[in-house]
Length: 546
Image (cartoon, rainbow, N blue to C red; front, top):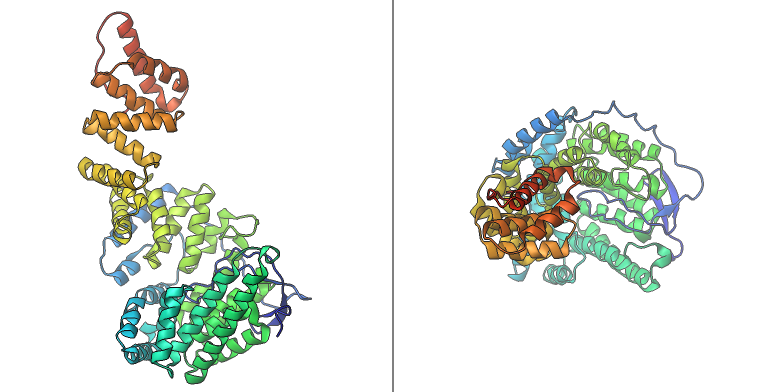
């Protein structure tokens, strides 16, 4: 098929033609697909499909419910066993998550897999045959053991959903070492699809250089070669078909996707990863329809008794309607989010809802959904970081510390992680540990106003390191003159050390911040000091804002 004749099938429902508009929606979790700009336009008539299910009555989270949720989350985060931690987490207030789905998803996200580090070591040590044996055991477990549902799919997503040159060298070495390994070819094809995505980019087709499109085409041809070889060697490897569906959507076409769906579901009629891709290509943004999505979801739910992970498809139509991903300049229906997640969604959807809620000024809702996202995806640093930032305003010192400790463990040099742990120490009244972390954070990011402010407050109000406090106060005044803390710190040092210029600082503060309701107690104290000085009397040495 020529490059100008790209077509797409929405599942097994109908054929569509491709065009070039940007899609901002993330692709199915654990299937290998990612956001791509080359999405289809309607060919002719709309697709037939089931009528989307109406939303249940929405639930408004109260502060009491949020507090109870966070208390339960604190208890769960204190559990060291990953699976038990996931199972112990509270569901969102007022929701009706299917417990079988929760247990299956916790098991899926926390099951043992062959890591990329293990795969690398085996290949580099000349033990590729052992890697094939381990992956073969995972495939057999996935096909026969309920507690191992999706294990091989999870492994491929965790290890080979990567378009880097470093991984390409490793996979090529694996193919050379094991020329008859279906897993080597499957992993290679899987990674080639991601390389094609990276080569294409995410801009509008009209703004994408032809060289990018040519590179994507070449890489998808290589992906197809390896995936077809893997399928011939062992057709049971379900990640083959997830990668094929994605490659078909990018360029290889409708018949290609249709064949991948047919063969993949024949191998595993209850495949979570394949059905996730199936729902993805049925979306309206691909000029499917909500009805087409619902049809695919209904088909997947027929197999939920065999694989409860398929229950995670239930909220996808409602999630699309509510625009939880804040996509494509369409309105976001924040009030519908609790109704959307009356049923369990995957961690990608929960993450999107949490981040979108945060961006739309709903911190309580954001805290709940980001907590759920981190519940199932403990390695998501960005979500845990944003959740911790939200928790810093919720007076949850124990939970904040639990998250901050994990952030620092994951990225010990990250200044945001160190700063949050420093703030957590402050909430626990541990000034010395807070001082250490905040100083380290500021050294790594000298322009962080929060770290400057917190560390400057420690120097002035707790440790009385006047020179260090003066330096940070001066920087805050210079860089953020409309921010009152720098002036408060300067006034406190001038009052206590003492240093010259106190009256000028007090007059400046009263003039510029006197109408700020949050500064009234400090302004009143400054006026009392000036009044006492005017009468020739002494004034109390009280810090401003300590």
